[in-house]
Image 1: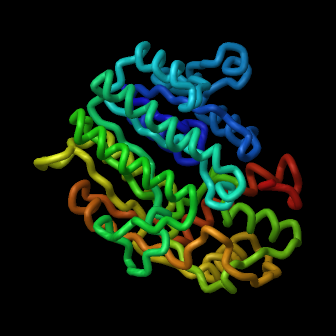
Image 2 (image 1 turned 90 degrees about the vertical axis):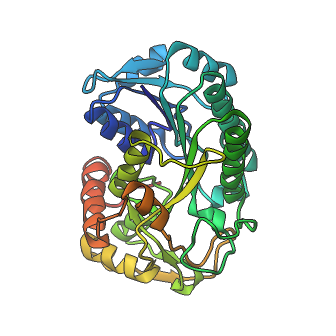
Length: 346
Protein backbone atom coordinates (compact mmCIF):
# COMPACT_ATOMS: atom_id res chain seq x y z
CA UNK A 1 0.00 0.00 0.00
CA UNK A 2 1.33 3.41 -1.03
CA UNK A 3 0.53 6.80 0.51
CA UNK A 4 0.57 9.77 -1.87
CA UNK A 5 0.34 13.23 -0.31
CA UNK A 6 -0.79 16.11 -2.49
CA UNK A 7 -3.07 13.70 -4.35
CA UNK A 8 -5.35 16.45 -5.64
CA UNK A 9 -2.41 18.41 -6.98
CA UNK A 10 -1.07 18.44 -10.53
CA UNK A 11 1.57 15.73 -10.25
CA UNK A 12 -0.20 13.93 -7.40
CA UNK A 13 -3.35 13.42 -9.49
CA UNK A 14 -1.37 11.93 -12.37
CA UNK A 15 0.68 9.72 -10.04
CA UNK A 16 -2.25 8.30 -8.08
CA UNK A 17 -4.16 7.42 -11.23
CA UNK A 18 -1.06 5.80 -12.75
CA UNK A 19 -0.44 3.73 -9.63
CA UNK A 20 -4.01 2.51 -9.17
CA UNK A 21 -4.33 1.76 -12.89
CA UNK A 22 -1.23 -0.43 -12.47
CA UNK A 23 -2.97 -2.35 -9.69
CA UNK A 24 -1.36 -0.70 -6.67
CA UNK A 25 -3.44 0.11 -3.59
CA UNK A 26 -3.18 3.83 -2.88
CA UNK A 27 -4.25 6.18 -0.11
CA UNK A 28 -4.23 9.79 -1.25
CA UNK A 29 -4.35 12.86 0.98
CA UNK A 30 -4.65 16.58 0.26
CA UNK A 31 -5.75 19.60 2.27
CA UNK A 32 -7.44 21.18 -0.80
CA UNK A 33 -6.29 24.67 0.14
CA UNK A 34 -7.14 27.78 -1.87
CA UNK A 35 -3.64 28.76 -3.06
CA UNK A 36 -5.29 28.47 -6.47
CA UNK A 37 -9.00 27.82 -7.15
CA UNK A 38 -9.97 24.55 -5.41
CA UNK A 39 -12.39 23.83 -8.26
CA UNK A 40 -9.48 22.50 -10.30
CA UNK A 41 -8.41 20.21 -7.45
CA UNK A 42 -11.94 18.89 -7.08
CA UNK A 43 -12.10 18.34 -10.84
CA UNK A 44 -8.90 16.28 -10.72
CA UNK A 45 -10.36 14.21 -7.90
CA UNK A 46 -13.59 13.74 -9.83
CA UNK A 47 -11.58 12.49 -12.81
CA UNK A 48 -10.08 9.92 -10.43
CA UNK A 49 -13.54 8.86 -9.24
CA UNK A 50 -13.58 10.76 -5.93
CA UNK A 51 -16.94 12.32 -5.06
CA UNK A 52 -16.73 15.88 -3.73
CA UNK A 53 -19.91 15.75 -1.65
CA UNK A 54 -18.78 12.59 0.12
CA UNK A 55 -15.41 14.13 0.97
CA UNK A 56 -17.02 17.36 2.19
CA UNK A 57 -19.42 15.43 4.42
CA UNK A 58 -17.09 12.79 5.84
CA UNK A 59 -13.57 13.90 4.99
CA UNK A 60 -12.91 10.75 2.98
CA UNK A 61 -14.14 8.81 -0.06
CA UNK A 62 -13.33 5.69 -2.03
CA UNK A 63 -12.94 6.06 -5.78
CA UNK A 64 -15.83 4.92 -7.97
CA UNK A 65 -13.33 4.26 -10.78
CA UNK A 66 -10.60 2.56 -8.80
CA UNK A 67 -11.67 0.42 -5.80
CA UNK A 68 -8.01 0.39 -4.75
CA UNK A 69 -7.93 4.19 -4.27
CA UNK A 70 -9.01 5.80 -0.98
CA UNK A 71 -8.84 9.61 -0.53
CA UNK A 72 -8.68 11.62 2.71
CA UNK A 73 -8.91 15.38 3.15
CA UNK A 74 -5.89 15.97 5.36
CA UNK A 75 -3.01 18.43 5.52
CA UNK A 76 0.52 17.45 6.53
CA UNK A 77 0.54 20.25 9.09
CA UNK A 78 -2.05 18.29 11.08
CA UNK A 79 0.37 16.15 13.08
CA UNK A 80 -2.26 14.18 15.03
CA UNK A 81 -4.24 13.57 11.85
CA UNK A 82 -1.19 12.28 10.00
CA UNK A 83 -0.38 10.03 12.97
CA UNK A 84 -3.90 8.56 12.95
CA UNK A 85 -3.62 7.85 9.22
CA UNK A 86 -0.40 5.90 9.71
CA UNK A 87 -2.04 3.97 12.54
CA UNK A 88 -4.98 3.08 10.30
CA UNK A 89 -2.96 1.83 7.31
CA UNK A 90 0.28 -0.11 6.89
CA UNK A 91 2.16 1.76 4.17
CA UNK A 92 4.99 -0.02 2.39
CA UNK A 93 6.01 3.23 0.65
CA UNK A 94 5.19 6.92 0.89
CA UNK A 95 5.41 9.52 -1.88
CA UNK A 96 5.37 13.03 -0.44
CA UNK A 97 4.26 15.51 -3.11
CA UNK A 98 2.29 17.84 -0.85
CA UNK A 99 3.89 21.26 -0.48
CA UNK A 100 3.13 24.92 -0.67
CA UNK A 101 4.19 25.59 -4.24
CA UNK A 102 5.31 28.69 -6.12
CA UNK A 103 8.42 30.82 -5.91
CA UNK A 104 6.80 34.26 -6.07
CA UNK A 105 4.08 33.47 -3.52
CA UNK A 106 6.81 32.70 -1.00
CA UNK A 107 7.92 36.34 -1.09
CA UNK A 108 4.67 37.46 0.54
CA UNK A 109 3.47 34.34 2.40
CA UNK A 110 6.53 32.77 4.02
CA UNK A 111 4.69 31.12 6.90
CA UNK A 112 2.67 28.93 4.53
CA UNK A 113 5.93 27.42 3.27
CA UNK A 114 7.30 26.76 6.74
CA UNK A 115 4.04 25.13 7.87
CA UNK A 116 3.60 22.83 4.87
CA UNK A 117 7.09 22.27 3.50
CA UNK A 118 9.02 22.04 6.77
CA UNK A 119 6.65 21.19 9.64
CA UNK A 120 4.52 18.98 7.41
CA UNK A 121 7.53 17.15 6.04
CA UNK A 122 8.86 16.46 9.53
CA UNK A 123 5.45 14.98 10.42
CA UNK A 124 5.79 12.59 7.48
CA UNK A 125 9.38 11.68 8.34
CA UNK A 126 8.47 10.97 11.95
CA UNK A 127 5.56 8.69 11.05
CA UNK A 128 7.67 6.87 8.45
CA UNK A 129 10.27 6.30 11.18
CA UNK A 130 7.80 5.12 13.79
CA UNK A 131 6.00 2.76 11.42
CA UNK A 132 9.12 1.49 9.66
CA UNK A 133 7.99 2.45 6.16
CA UNK A 134 10.12 0.74 3.54
CA UNK A 135 10.77 3.76 1.33
CA UNK A 136 9.99 7.48 1.44
CA UNK A 137 10.10 9.21 -1.94
CA UNK A 138 9.66 12.98 -1.84
CA UNK A 139 9.48 15.91 -4.24
CA UNK A 140 12.37 18.31 -4.23
CA UNK A 141 12.95 20.94 -6.91
CA UNK A 142 15.45 22.28 -9.42
CA UNK A 143 15.09 25.56 -7.52
CA UNK A 144 17.55 24.22 -4.91
CA UNK A 145 20.36 24.99 -7.39
CA UNK A 146 19.55 28.67 -6.91
CA UNK A 147 22.32 30.96 -8.08
CA UNK A 148 24.49 28.12 -9.34
CA UNK A 149 25.90 29.20 -12.71
CA UNK A 150 27.24 25.81 -13.80
CA UNK A 151 25.08 23.83 -16.25
CA UNK A 152 23.83 21.22 -16.56
CA UNK A 153 22.91 20.98 -12.89
CA UNK A 154 24.24 17.80 -11.29
CA UNK A 155 23.37 16.32 -7.91
CA UNK A 156 26.97 16.87 -6.78
CA UNK A 157 26.79 20.65 -7.41
CA UNK A 158 26.78 23.19 -4.61
CA UNK A 159 23.24 24.01 -3.43
CA UNK A 160 24.09 26.43 -0.65
CA UNK A 161 22.75 29.56 -2.40
CA UNK A 162 18.97 29.27 -2.80
CA UNK A 163 17.30 32.24 -4.48
CA UNK A 164 13.89 31.94 -2.77
CA UNK A 165 12.27 30.75 0.43
CA UNK A 166 10.55 28.01 -1.56
CA UNK A 167 13.94 26.72 -2.69
CA UNK A 168 15.28 26.91 0.86
CA UNK A 169 12.39 24.79 2.18
CA UNK A 170 13.00 22.18 -0.52
CA UNK A 171 16.68 22.02 0.37
CA UNK A 172 15.71 21.67 4.02
CA UNK A 173 13.62 18.62 3.05
CA UNK A 174 16.72 17.00 1.54
CA UNK A 175 18.76 17.66 4.66
CA UNK A 176 16.03 16.44 7.00
CA UNK A 177 15.57 13.27 4.96
CA UNK A 178 19.31 12.61 5.13
CA UNK A 179 19.25 12.98 8.91
CA UNK A 180 16.40 10.47 9.27
CA UNK A 181 18.18 8.08 6.93
CA UNK A 182 21.38 8.44 8.95
CA UNK A 183 19.86 8.19 12.42
CA UNK A 184 17.10 5.65 11.83
CA UNK A 185 18.00 3.83 8.62
CA UNK A 186 14.89 5.15 6.85
CA UNK A 187 15.38 4.73 3.07
CA UNK A 188 14.66 8.09 1.42
CA UNK A 189 14.84 9.29 -2.17
CA UNK A 190 14.42 12.91 -3.22
CA UNK A 191 13.62 13.85 -6.81
CA UNK A 192 14.48 17.34 -8.01
CA UNK A 193 11.70 18.18 -10.50
CA UNK A 194 12.49 20.42 -13.46
CA UNK A 195 9.62 22.67 -14.73
CA UNK A 196 6.80 20.16 -15.03
CA UNK A 197 4.01 20.98 -17.50
CA UNK A 198 1.03 19.25 -19.07
CA UNK A 199 -2.73 18.61 -18.73
CA UNK A 200 -4.31 19.47 -15.39
CA UNK A 201 -1.41 21.84 -14.64
CA UNK A 202 -1.50 24.53 -11.98
CA UNK A 203 -3.07 27.83 -13.11
CA UNK A 204 -0.23 29.86 -11.57
CA UNK A 205 2.36 28.27 -13.86
CA UNK A 206 3.64 30.39 -16.74
CA UNK A 207 2.18 28.25 -19.52
CA UNK A 208 -1.32 28.46 -17.99
CA UNK A 209 -1.05 32.19 -17.40
CA UNK A 210 0.20 32.69 -20.95
CA UNK A 211 -2.65 30.63 -22.42
CA UNK A 212 -5.26 32.54 -20.41
CA UNK A 213 -3.90 35.92 -21.48
CA UNK A 214 -3.31 35.01 -25.14
CA UNK A 215 -6.84 33.66 -25.62
CA UNK A 216 -8.29 36.70 -23.85
CA UNK A 217 -6.29 39.13 -25.99
CA UNK A 218 -4.26 40.44 -23.08
CA UNK A 219 -0.50 41.00 -23.26
CA UNK A 220 1.82 38.55 -21.53
CA UNK A 221 4.79 39.54 -19.39
CA UNK A 222 8.07 38.08 -20.56
CA UNK A 223 10.61 38.34 -17.77
CA UNK A 224 14.32 39.03 -18.11
CA UNK A 225 13.64 40.37 -21.61
CA UNK A 226 13.02 36.79 -22.71
CA UNK A 227 16.59 35.70 -21.95
CA UNK A 228 15.48 32.74 -19.87
CA UNK A 229 15.42 29.00 -20.49
CA UNK A 230 13.81 26.13 -18.67
CA UNK A 231 14.19 22.36 -18.76
CA UNK A 232 10.51 21.77 -19.49
CA UNK A 233 9.49 18.21 -18.54
CA UNK A 234 6.17 16.65 -19.50
CA UNK A 235 4.13 15.35 -16.56
CA UNK A 236 3.88 11.78 -17.89
CA UNK A 237 7.69 11.59 -17.94
CA UNK A 238 7.83 12.79 -14.33
CA UNK A 239 5.22 10.26 -13.26
CA UNK A 240 7.02 7.49 -15.11
CA UNK A 241 10.14 8.25 -13.11
CA UNK A 242 8.22 8.38 -9.84
CA UNK A 243 6.61 5.02 -10.50
CA UNK A 244 9.99 3.45 -11.23
CA UNK A 245 11.52 4.82 -8.05
CA UNK A 246 8.54 3.73 -5.96
CA UNK A 247 8.12 0.24 -7.37
CA UNK A 248 11.56 -0.92 -8.48
CA UNK A 249 14.11 -2.19 -5.95
CA UNK A 250 16.48 0.50 -4.75
CA UNK A 251 20.05 0.17 -6.04
CA UNK A 252 22.40 -1.51 -3.61
CA UNK A 253 24.82 0.77 -1.81
CA UNK A 254 26.62 1.10 1.49
CA UNK A 255 26.32 3.95 3.95
CA UNK A 256 23.36 6.24 4.62
CA UNK A 257 20.26 5.09 2.65
CA UNK A 258 19.51 8.58 1.35
CA UNK A 259 19.58 9.50 -2.34
CA UNK A 260 18.81 12.54 -4.46
CA UNK A 261 18.20 12.55 -8.22
CA UNK A 262 17.45 15.13 -10.88
CA UNK A 263 14.39 14.30 -12.95
CA UNK A 264 13.92 16.34 -16.12
CA UNK A 265 14.08 16.32 -19.89
CA UNK A 266 17.72 17.38 -20.03
CA UNK A 267 17.01 19.81 -22.88
CA UNK A 268 16.59 23.45 -21.85
CA UNK A 269 14.36 25.54 -24.11
CA UNK A 270 14.39 29.31 -24.48
CA UNK A 271 11.26 30.93 -23.07
CA UNK A 272 10.51 32.70 -26.36
CA UNK A 273 10.59 29.37 -28.21
CA UNK A 274 8.18 27.91 -25.67
CA UNK A 275 5.82 30.87 -26.20
CA UNK A 276 6.11 30.43 -29.97
CA UNK A 277 5.02 26.79 -29.74
CA UNK A 278 2.17 27.76 -27.43
CA UNK A 279 1.02 30.40 -29.93
CA UNK A 280 1.03 27.81 -32.71
CA UNK A 281 -1.18 25.42 -30.75
CA UNK A 282 -3.54 28.16 -29.56
CA UNK A 283 -3.73 29.69 -33.04
CA UNK A 284 -3.20 33.19 -31.66
CA UNK A 285 -0.15 35.47 -31.58
CA UNK A 286 0.74 36.88 -28.19
CA UNK A 287 1.30 40.53 -27.43
CA UNK A 288 4.48 40.57 -25.36
CA UNK A 289 5.64 43.03 -22.73
CA UNK A 290 9.32 42.52 -22.00
CA UNK A 291 10.38 43.25 -18.45
CA UNK A 292 13.15 42.57 -15.95
CA UNK A 293 13.88 39.51 -13.84
CA UNK A 294 11.44 38.71 -11.06
CA UNK A 295 12.83 38.35 -7.51
CA UNK A 296 13.49 34.69 -6.74
CA UNK A 297 13.77 33.64 -10.38
CA UNK A 298 16.82 32.13 -12.04
CA UNK A 299 17.91 32.57 -15.63
CA UNK A 300 18.36 28.93 -16.63
CA UNK A 301 17.60 25.38 -15.51
CA UNK A 302 19.15 22.31 -17.12
CA UNK A 303 19.06 18.81 -15.62
CA UNK A 304 21.84 16.28 -15.72
CA UNK A 305 19.77 13.10 -15.37
CA UNK A 306 22.59 10.59 -15.82
CA UNK A 307 22.30 9.26 -12.24
CA UNK A 308 18.59 8.45 -12.60
CA UNK A 309 19.27 6.91 -16.01
CA UNK A 310 22.01 4.73 -14.49
CA UNK A 311 20.06 3.54 -11.45
CA UNK A 312 16.51 3.32 -12.85
CA UNK A 313 16.92 3.31 -16.66
CA UNK A 314 14.97 6.57 -16.69
CA UNK A 315 14.76 8.88 -19.68
CA UNK A 316 12.17 11.54 -20.50
CA UNK A 317 10.89 10.95 -24.03
CA UNK A 318 8.03 13.41 -24.66
CA UNK A 319 8.95 16.17 -27.09
CA UNK A 320 7.94 19.76 -26.32
CA UNK A 321 5.66 20.04 -29.36
CA UNK A 322 3.76 16.91 -28.31
CA UNK A 323 3.52 18.02 -24.69
CA UNK A 324 2.28 21.52 -25.48
CA UNK A 325 -0.32 20.14 -27.89
CA UNK A 326 -1.62 17.82 -25.16
CA UNK A 327 -1.74 20.68 -22.66
CA UNK A 328 -3.60 23.02 -25.03
CA UNK A 329 -6.11 20.31 -25.90
CA UNK A 330 -6.85 19.76 -22.22
CA UNK A 331 -6.90 23.51 -21.53
CA UNK A 332 -9.52 24.18 -24.18
CA UNK A 333 -11.68 21.25 -23.03
CA UNK A 334 -11.47 22.20 -19.37
CA UNK A 335 -11.75 26.01 -19.38
CA UNK A 336 -13.46 27.19 -22.52
CA UNK A 337 -16.74 25.21 -22.48
CA UNK A 338 -17.58 26.62 -19.05
CA UNK A 339 -15.99 30.04 -19.00
CA UNK A 340 -15.48 31.14 -22.57
CA UNK A 341 -12.27 31.89 -24.37
CA UNK A 342 -11.53 34.94 -22.24
CA UNK A 343 -11.52 33.07 -18.93
CA UNK A 344 -9.17 30.54 -17.52
CA UNK A 345 -6.37 30.40 -15.01
CA UNK A 346 -7.27 33.16 -12.61
